[in-house]
Amino acid sequence: MLQDQQYLRIPGPTPIPPSVERAMAKPMVGHRASVTDDLLKKIQPGLRKVFGTDQDVLIVAGSGTAGLEAAAVNTVRRGEEAIVIVSGSFGARFEKICLAHGIIVHRYETEWGEAFEPEVVRGMLEEHPGVKAVFSTYCETSTGVVNPVAELARVVREVSDALIIADGVSIIGGVEAKMDEWGLDVLVTGSQKAMMLPPGLMFAAVSDRAWNVIEANPDRGFYLDLVQYRDSIRENTTPFTPAVSLLYGLDQALTLLEEEGIAEVAARHELMRDMIRAAFRAHGIPLLTSDEAGSPTVTAVRPDDFDAEGFRSLIHREFGLAVASGQGKLEGKIFRVGHMGYCSPGDVLQMIALFELGIARAGKQIETGKGVAAAQRVYLQKGEQTK
Image (cartoon, rainbow, N blue to C red; front, side, top):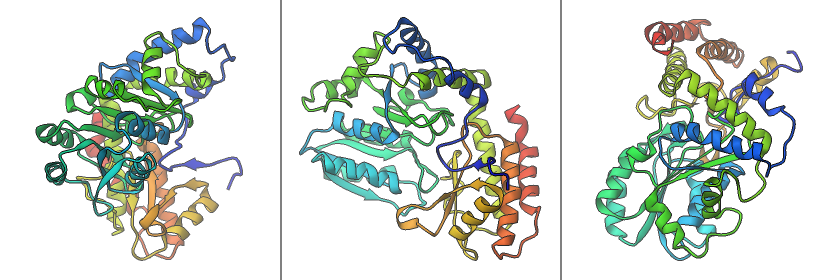
């Protein structure tokens, strides 16, 4: 293996487009200079389109987890009640954040690998009418499940005034999000996944309904006080030092998304998902999720006749191909393939070919090329839509 060559196919961080890397290499400028103000103003329309909202999208120097904590601490006060939907490790992280801030949590846990059922939440809200917010993951990164957040919002609004808060960290930028149309109140994501940037930025969009709740909350914290970010972005600035180089990269990443088209970006991600699922299915290797719940950005594979961790180590050692391990109760049982952001069907075919070699070297008897052929058939059937 070439020492400097790697194929990064984990569900974040993801590869960076060369034009984005070049944009981030621009000379540093003052973070309070007019050039930075102009950059922040230029970025907003593209971010709104990616989120599917008319609201300003807040930009915070921080990780996706900073977005989860900001969503919790700004919307729910200590001692108030919330429902947290746990369909994997990141739903569980939402629960930990809420508990750390003294929020009373009503937990709804699905079988990991299955999407949540909004009607269960309806029943919980009827049982607990004091709930102030419902927290969920849009895409549960740890399982590769895409959850029905639009249906969740509809159900919640039918029976409650609770806010609907969604973690979109591993999916926003890879699908056609429609925050306003769906009725989500807070939607957050991070820079290092489908947004095609390095780690370091968190984005959050907030509904008018949620702003009314947030403004009335006297204990929003300091650095993650979203009101400060809202008031600053209206003046094309930030309350604290922004990650200036990442803003240049964000500007270029949004340009790439605009040039391809949001609908086309979504179709590309769906195509890559279908190609990968077809390849593993051709070899009889189980997938963690159903086709209906399978995310367009990350696929979880649960092999039953070779070791997931041994396979991961082998393909990384021999080919420089990095895929992710399982988390929490799925540790050692699955591996997760990221196919988001700067990733194409051609990349997927290369991945599958290397997977097949790794599977064979791991001791499973397979017909090499069978998975590649299955993925090629999917591409020929569906790939014309992405041109």
